[in-house]
Image 1 (cartoon, rainbow, N blue to C red):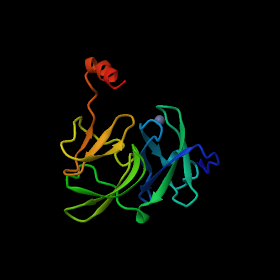
Image 2 (cartoon, rainbow, N blue to C red):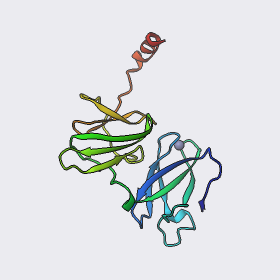
Image 3 (cartoon, protein in one colour):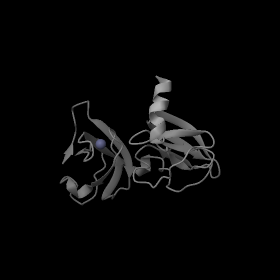
Image 4 (cartoon, rainbow, N blue to C red):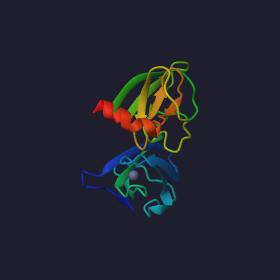
Length: 175
Ligand SMILES: [Zn+2]
């Protein structure tokens, strides 16, 4: 059911949805796992879609890390569109807020002047290739692995894990 958590230590994930969205995928704020939430799992969603209001949040427990967090649906009308999956264009950073690895970015498409929002939840469930940036980029998320976006191309990359033989060596050098 809908909850209004009074415990201030429950992390909240705000994410814009269509007014009649029956499901949404958001990134767990603790471990980054994509959580698929179904509106029908909360009885307050009588019509089978998420209620959007100033006070409605939906408490859920991440199946991956067992932490409880709250999903807050936001009206799409009030929000910038989310960066579309697969968009390949040059992007300019308009603004950012939050902490590294869990920021809300506003990016402008230099080709169309359209502004988009990009958060860790935006990319939850996307297919992202392993690779490295070849030009300046931004960190979209660091959980469960680092995902970066190359501003020149709009390409997202997951950071390749270092070869196991190199891990201890590089750790030793930094220590
Ligand atoms: Zn989790």
